[in-house]
Image 1 (cartoon, rainbow, N blue to C red):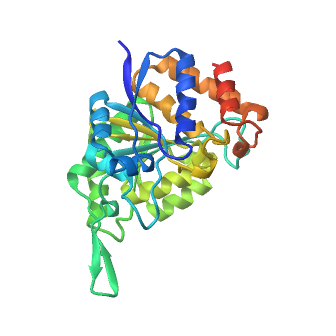
Image 2 (image 1 turned 135 degrees about the vertical axis):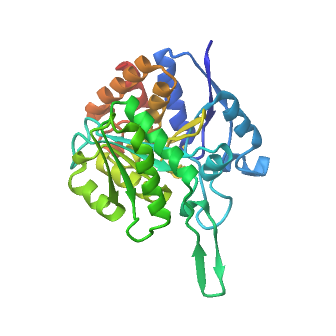
Image 3 (image 1 turned 90 degrees about the horizontal axis):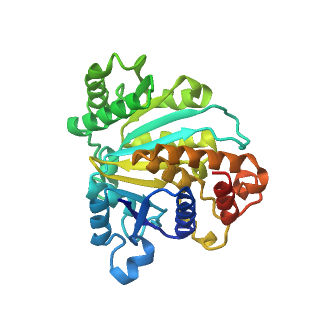
Length: 334
C-alpha cells in the first residue's frame, strides 16, 4: 500500500521546488502518493485564511507532510502560517541538520551538526503587550513539560543515529529561572542516557556562537530553547552554504512536516532559477523518517553527484544550471 503524504506546494518558488521533489521521488520509484493541499498567500483571497482547516485535516490523516516555503508579510497581514502549523499540530521540535556537501566553495569542511530547537515556547509564544505608552514587554515562557519532551526526543533520535556528543544551549547565568529550568531538565533527562553518549554538556549561547564559528568540529548535537535554536540554526546553515542548502523538519508526537527553511522568493517564481536543494534534502530526510532508507541514500548520492559538476549546479551554488537541469542531473545520477 502506498504511503500517502500531504504536499503543500507553497508560495512564490514553492511549486517549482516541490515539482522537483516529485520528479526525483518519482524516478526513485518510491511508493509514495501525494495529497496536494494549498495554503499560504495563494489561497488567502479565495479561502479567507492562509491555513484552511482541510490542510490541517490532511496532515493529521496522513501523519507526514512536505511543505514548500510560504510568504509571511513583514509587519502587516496574516500571522505566519509556519507558526500556526506548529501551534495547531503541536509540532514541538524543529530539527535542523547541517552537513557539508561536495562541490561548494566554503570555508569549512566536514561539518555535521544537528540542532533540536523547542518549537512552541520561549519568547516565540508571542505573549507580549504594551506597558503604558513608552514600553513594551514580552514574556519568556519555559515549562518543564515542554523542555522535557524536546530533550527526550533529541536524546532518543541522537541515540538511534549513533551520535555521541549532545550539548544544551542556554543563558542560565542571567535568566536563572527560565533558562535555568531548561538546563536543569536537560540534565534530568540525560540521566537516562548516560551510557549512550560519550559527552553530555552545556554551553552559554553567546559562547556557543563563538565556538561554532571557531571550531564547529568539536560539536555534534545541540538542544536549544526556541529563540537560541532559531538563531544558531541559521549560523550553522552559514557554515554549510546558507539557507539554500538547509533542510528542516517540524516534529510532534506521530506527526512530521518537512520543509526548506528559506523564503518564497516570488520574483523568481516560474523562471527556472530557483535552487531546489533545501527542499530536496528535506524530502530525503522525509524518506528516511518513513523508513525508505535505501531510497534516501540513493537520493543523497544523486544530489551529491550533481553538485560535483559545475554545469549541473544552480547559479547560486557557483554553477550554470536552472531548476530543471539540476533536477534532471540528480535523476540521471540516481
